[in-house]
Length: 289
Length: 159
Image (cartoon, rainbow over all chains, first blue to last red; front, side, top):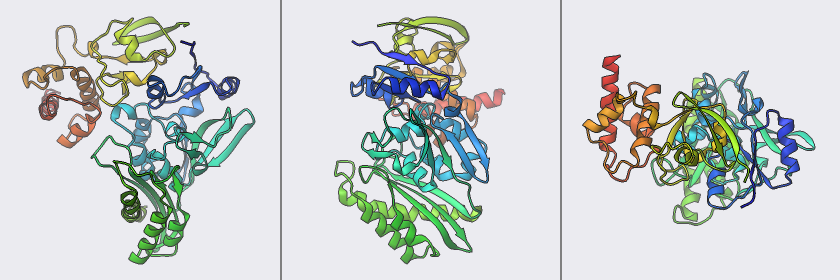
């Protein structure tokens, strides 16, 4: 058995330096709820484990005012659930993050890990996409920002360059009349992986949709931003025709796998159903803001 | 393999131990630390048999590296009773026979204690949701849920 090194750097610079120096043999440890399982089943054999939880920026939740937030990549779900203002500004993002596993998993699992694990079915990702979250990434070449939907490259793969680490998510300020929601379809009632997951964020003014974003998960190799669904909703009063057009756009975006948990036909149909249901919840929340 | 030195607190007692960097907290508890009350079920975070608290947060010991315990406050089932005085949940689980084989019980008790600390007056749904990360293959959960609700009621009236 080869030696595994464990590092818990205090600064981002140290972490990036160690990650780059390991040249692909290192793994980033945030909550560890995916990494430890992958190490146990032999799927991953890291030479170095870099624990990022001692780095302040990785575990901070900053309320930037006006509904804008910066969330460290390693913040566990339970911290966001207990945050006094986050869930009021972004109830859809919070409900998505809090659907990841049990209370035990919530104590550790983070949105950064959920994104970088690269699962098409990660619950927080469609909600972050709908929210228009921007990811701050730091690597040997410096710091850059990318829209959250640009991070996944396929199952288990990301578009991060070698040595790059996700530092934080920035959620934009909210206009008055905004609301978001996340729904997922699973065959069980709890503790399951999405067969379809859909996040939506709406801004309404006088009952008319001014802005919309739709994120769709578990129906393609990566989580999708469904721009055609948003276009179908913008300018509408969320009438049946607009909702059906948006649902059709979601169905058209689906390129799902076929498995025992959900067939292609089923996943595609459910994507449209979730669009309509999630839009209704987001609109109701928007009315309250 | 080079072992790492870990300084931590377990059930209020300062503890030092040596660990392989890749060993889980569960491995450390059941191995060098000799605290075998925490059970291994699945080893992949699905069953909750290895539930412990870390700085007051409920976690699965199998999903945490032992070296991550450095500087943390760990709570295990061994710290639940005060000497011979059982925690009200432990007492109630015995009275109401809320266990059969007992493998899941330490994890269920730790999770139930964590739940009641956050929510002293849970509904049945709160309890079922709060314990959804703890699998029991014997009881069908009903006696567990009733014992937790009964304990919560008694702890509220005693408070």
